Image 1 (cartoon, rainbow, N blue to C red):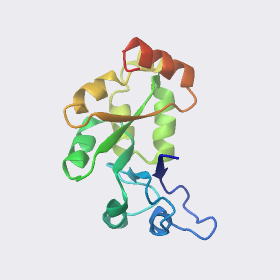
Image 2: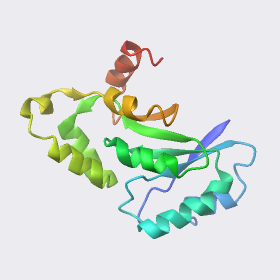
Image 3: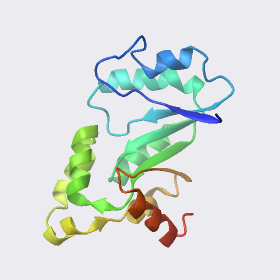
Length: 167
């Protein structure tokens, strides 16, 4: 194993660890590249102040941050500007806007939900896949790293990556 992404995952602790910070403290991943979660729009599972403290506590162990996926570029740019380690911006592969809203509700991407709802006027867009190139274009001057969430659309995402010469 060369690298690991250490993230939380449940409102209710399962097992003896109740945070990713506790796992990092064990030293299990010494000598391995470590990524930690970043939440530019907050998280439904933790308050903003607790989230900020967790980030401060975890950064000494981390080599990079992987953000939750977002659709609005400004929270991403603001988040990146405050970081001292590389940020891998979470993006979705191409998918329908109705699917994006469903997943945004699950992960608590508040501003991205509002962004989607305010751009809901074009009903036909609900039938077309949302292309992440626009978001990439808006944040690529702030980072060279992207983390793609496929949400089960692996085939479509792979096709999109090839068509856009990302792989």
